Amino acid sequence: MMDFFTRLAQLIGEMSIAQEELLLSNEKLLQNRNMLTHIINTIPQSIFWKDRNSVYLGCNQVFAHDAGLDSPESIIGKNDFDLPWSREDSERYRADDREVMENVCAKKHTIKTQRQMSDREAWLETTKIPLADASSTVIGLLGVYEDITERKRAEEEKLAIEKQLQQTQKLESLGVLAGGIAHDFNNILMTIIGNADLALMRINKESPVVSNLHQIEAAAAKAADLAKQMLAYSGKGKFIIDNIVINRLLEEMLNMLQISISKNAVLRLNLHEHLPTVEADVTQMRQVVMNLVINASEAIGDKSGVIAITTGCMDCDSNYLKNIWLDDNISEGLYVYLEIADTGCGMDKDTISKLFDPFFTTKFTGRGLGLAAVLGIIRGHKGAIKVYSEPKKGTSFKILLPASNRPAEVFNVDATKDNWKGSGTVLLVDDEETVRGIGKEMLQELGFTTITAGDGREAVEIFKITPDIALVIMDLTMPHMDGEQCFRELRTMGHNVKVIMSSGYNEQEVTQKFAGKGLAGFIQKPYKLSDLKEAIRKLCD
Image 1 (cartoon, one colour):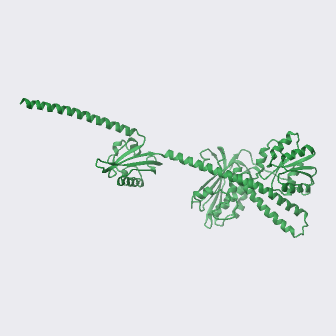
Image 2 (spheres, rainbow, N blue to C red; image 1 turned 180 degrees about the vertical axis):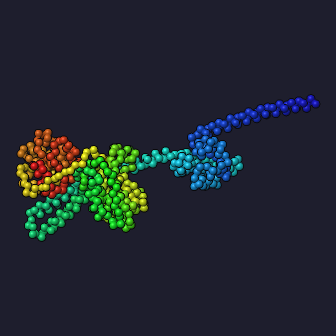
Image 3 (tube, one colour; image 1 turned 135 degrees about the vertical axis):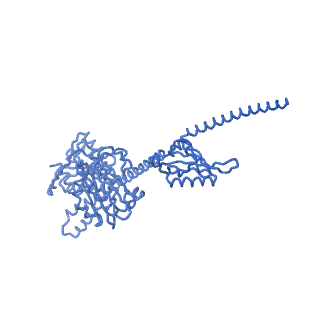
């Protein structure tokens, strides 16, 4: 009997020890479970796990918040259709679940979704991993996702900035090329137009050659116009800046615009009253409006449509000035805008990206620089262009021009006196021999004694031995010593002779170089005898 009780005591002791060990084990398991729960809830990513039927078995606190739940425990027993996802997203998630569990293979991908709780678009980087038991049977899956919306936006913004920079660099490169070609082209046209002009003055008016000379002049004028467009594209066209009212310009152009558009298009003006003035070249702005309106008319085509021209004024901050054409670091501030919108065919993104390339067109051939010239003109005015367009939804071009605080001005120009003649010695400085030749003939025709020089260095040497020179007409761009350096050298030598600068580039760019330095005038190449006469006569009046 004693053995029985001894054995019973041993068993009770062993049971007590086992029970104590079990309690310790359960406590350890509970501690581990709490630690795991704490870790999962501390992780910033959303974590969830499901059974074989895509029913949720658990999640962490971040996922519960995304799902609009009070606690992670509330997810147990729910499926995707019970949560605030769209039906389309829920079906997509369950399809991903099936793919992962059937293929027994993890899947990582990025999805774009609409978060119902915050009503915002979001990008999620998602990973799903199949879960298996000891016998390698798939019993569910573990999912982890991270909201990468901010990173995605930053990447997209970086790509947009890089694309804009590439576009700006392309425009600058093409602009330099176009400006250089136009400059050389104008020197050639100077010879053609000048000789034709002098020949017409000297030839018998009854000669049959007169007709040929007029044709040469007409063809050269068209070529000169193309050169002007190329300079406009490069932002170096000739600008005669006035303080103008955009509304007044549009009202003056209204009849001409209505004649120029398709009969199926209706033109509407929505002009905001009391706009600030803008400092702009009236002729160039007319070209901008005409090009954009004709472009809108062609986009409408044979169907009925509306072309709306709207003006207004707005404060533009850096955010608004993003994604504009002409990212030349234009400053924030007050801008007058001119918007030309149509209900035509619209454009896709690829077409928009090529829109301002020289000679690019989707329908027509032989249209010249068109919108490329518009871009250059606005560049030259320190403005910007915004383009909005979608296929079949029409297009809008919004021109932004810096507002001026000066009142509008009215300029009157006296008529040229046809019988005017000059006298004295003129020094003509140009590196092109043909330009020097025709220029000398023109000056002699006007009554001047003419000396020529091939560059600034030669001009300075001539001045040292010819003190009675009354006027210098000098090219800006020359080898050895350019026009600016020569002008500075003449002033250093004490000569206050009047200097007219000649160039294929625009007047504004040239006069800015010589602001406050006493430049007497400017003449744009190619010029005719009448242009040269008027430029010199103004100095003598």
